[in-house]
Amino acid sequence: MEQVYLHGLGQTPASWEKVTSQPALAEHSLCPDLTQLLQGKETTYQNLYAAVSALCSRCDGPINLCGLSLGGVLALQYSIEHPQKVNSLVLIAPQYHMPKTLLRVQNLLFRFLPSSAFPQGGLHKEQLIRLCATMGELDFRGSLSEITCPTLVLCGQRDTANQKAARELAALVKDAQLHIIPGAGHEVNLDAPEKLSELLCHFYGQTS
Image (cartoon, rainbow, N blue to C red; front, side, top):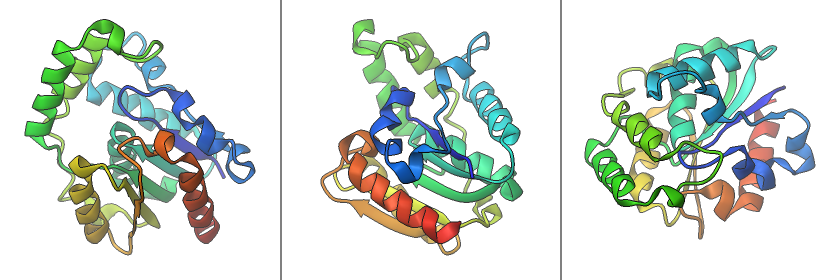
């Protein structure tokens, strides 16, 4: 079964390499480049979601869908709108309704950072600011009951900005599991790839 991994804001597909290199995960892993999906299109969340939705829908059969941060928002929306297509869902450092204050602070920080601070191969500074500005009205609180697949919610122990939302989401989605990963920050796929791989292998083993 295809496993689709959606990276976070400021990351690239390489951010998943240490996670998906594990034999149990490597064979059917697909890590799309969100930047490439937006090529030729205006950098908005709506355009990015449309591209991700099309990619997931082209996969043969149901998929195991995993997303971190921005990728988690995209994965959450796809699972709500296409429940028959998602075999299992993993949400890492997720938000299910956008914290507008946090988005404004993040965009303010982006504006003051030099362009050289943004990773090569990813979205550049102006694109990131534009993308975040188009996410402010996202709110999935009224649609969480549409998620019918097994769901695993993860968050790093040091990711205080997202831990509250992770706990709430795990309580709101039917039968969702929650794991707080010790020592990890926001980028769990980079901070604790071995532990993340272990949790994914166990979860996928339960849902296959």
